[in-house]
Length: 379
Image (cartoon, rainbow, N blue to C red; front, side, top):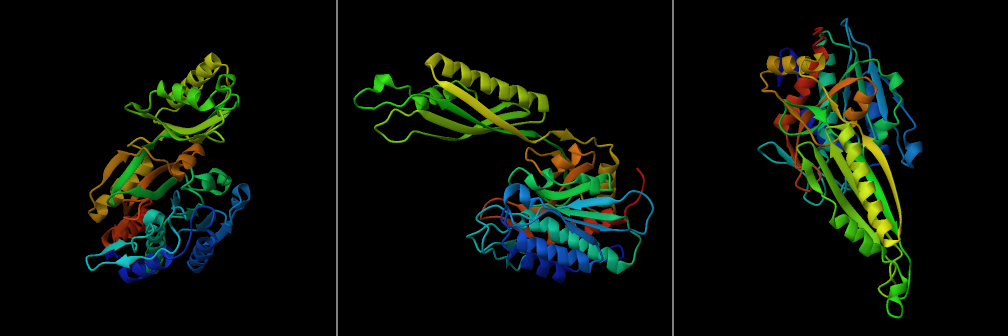
């Protein structure tokens, strides 16, 4: 594929995708992937650093950062795709069909989330360097542990980043799709503390923590609360044995909203409702929570968006601006003053063993990366 005078090497792209998807790289186990990407960036002439993100979580690799000085004046660009995959992600193998579709063997995820983004970045950069054409300063960040609430980029030292614009290749759908908005995500664990008693001889002496938790949750509205907010209780556990009145019960849930304040308000509503029920039953109550992602919205007039749409138009790619209700490392970029948007890298049915991509998407995605590297217009 030719992007004006930039040549995207389809066969090299295919080989690199097969090689990288074959690397086991589940969250907190990204060591082999980090080593491979470090070598690739060094071979391309990047200055490369690996941080100590693993020390925060007990993993075996850190975030990989690279910088390559450009030949054009003006602002540089940050490109990012995460290194980790979800389970089942061990022993992956890319299977290439004659029509260009790429799947796993059917017993694991493919790993297109996010190897598609990684190979498009690497091939896009490589093709521009081979062309000898002028280019912007390039920074890359390959974080660990994105699949577990973006823990890698959460502890990255953003003082290293020079670019004020970023493209995160981590969205499902056809090339040309970009998400400008993402939600706050709050996770929480609530606990009811009751009193144990023998379930046969003296159940009336106990305080049934599971029953109290179920009563509280039954009165709690869940699912889609409004057009921009959801609440879900996903896990519940408690008790010791069938002949013991359970003395404890915990539940774990999450809240998502495009409004950060609304997400906080829902959390307080959950806390209040569970506490009131516990008080009425003479039980104890506690709740812990963490804000894993903070909501953002990038305006359509922002330079980072205009550069994207111009790049698409120059390549004849139909572009679409949308929102996502999932998080990405871009949530953390925005928190640190970097205006970023999330681009589709041509992955489909991610997080399932039916996951797939297409060579056409990988090729278009690499060409789009190349165009973004070359576009130095000040919008």
